[in-house]
Amino acid sequence: MVCSYSITALFMVLLLNCNVGNTTDILDIRDEYNTVIKYAAIILFSLALLYNTVSNVLMAILFCCGRNSFYSHSFVLISSQLIICNFLNFIPQVIIVLFEMLKTEIDAYMSTWAHSIFATIDTFSFLATLHFTFFLAVNRLVVLSLPKFSVFFESAKFYFLIACVWLSVLVISLTEFHYCFKTFNVSNLQWSFNCTKTTVKSGAIFLKIRYIWTLALPIAMFSLYIPIFWNMRRKRNSVLDLRRTSGNIAGTKLKSTTNNGKYERSMLIQAAVVCGAMEIEIICFYFLPQFAAKLAGKEAGIPINIFINCYVIFNGAVLPTVNLIFFKRFRNEVKRTIIELSSRINNMK
Image (tube, rainbow, N blue to C red):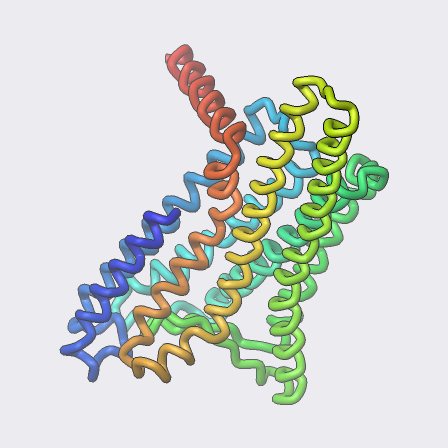
C-alpha cells in the first residue's frame, strides 16, 4: 500500500508539472490540452480498482474456503459486510468516474436519473462502510474486554442487528436523495452536493447533521480501541506479576504473554490505520480541495481531486491490507488457501 501511495504521489508531481503551460484550459480534464492528465488519471483509477478488487477477493476467498480458526464467526460476518460495501463502491467508480472520463465533452452527460441512482449507490456504500467499521470496533471491544456479553454475537439478535444497520444506511441514503442532488463534475473530477431540493434551510440542516455524524463515528471507533488495549495490558501485567511472585512460570504461559504483547500492538496499529484512513478520507473530501485552491490556485484542483478519488478507492482495501501486513497467520492462511485452490483447479483440468 505504501508503494501505491508513492506511485500516486509521483503522478501528482507529473500532473502539476503538466498544468503549468495550460492553466487557461485546466478546468476541464476532457480538453485536448489535458490529454496526459486524463489518461494518467484513468491509469491511476484503474490500478486502484484492480488492487482493491484483488485484495477484497483474496479476503473473501479466505473467509469462504479457508480454515478460519483464528477468526471468530462474528468477525468474519462483519468483515464480509465490509467486502460487500467495497464491491458496491466499485459500481459508481467505474460507471460514473471512469466511463464519464472516457467520453468526449459532447456526449459525456448520462441521463439525470441514471446519474442520481449511481450517486446514491456511492453514498450508500460509503455510509455502510462507515457503520460496519464502527460495528467491527464494537465487536472487538465486547469480545476482548467484555467477554461475558460476547454471547450476543452468537445469537439471532446479531443477525437482526446487521439487518438493522443495512436498513439504517438505506434510510440515510434515501434521505440524502430526498434533500440533495449529488453530482460528479467530470470536468474537474469532483463530487458535490446541492441540498436545495426542498428548501435551503432543511438542506443545510441535513448537511450539518451528515457532516457531524461522518466525522464523529471514526473518532468514536478509535476511542473504542483504548479500553481494548488497556485490558490487554492489564492481563499481561498480571501474568508478569505472577511470574515474579511465584518465581517459576510455565513456558507456555510465558510464551502466551509474549504473543499477547505482540497481538495487542498489532491490534492498536490496525485500529489506528483503519480508523485513521476513514477519518482522513472524510477530511480530504470536506477540506482538501478548498485548502489546495487557496494554497496553489485553481490549477491544483484536478490533481487534488485525482488524489482524493484514488484514496477513496484505496481505502476500500485497508482492512485486507492491514491484516496482510501485520498478521502473520493471515498471510500464511492466504498462501495456504491459494495453494489449495490452485491444486483443485489443476486437478479439474
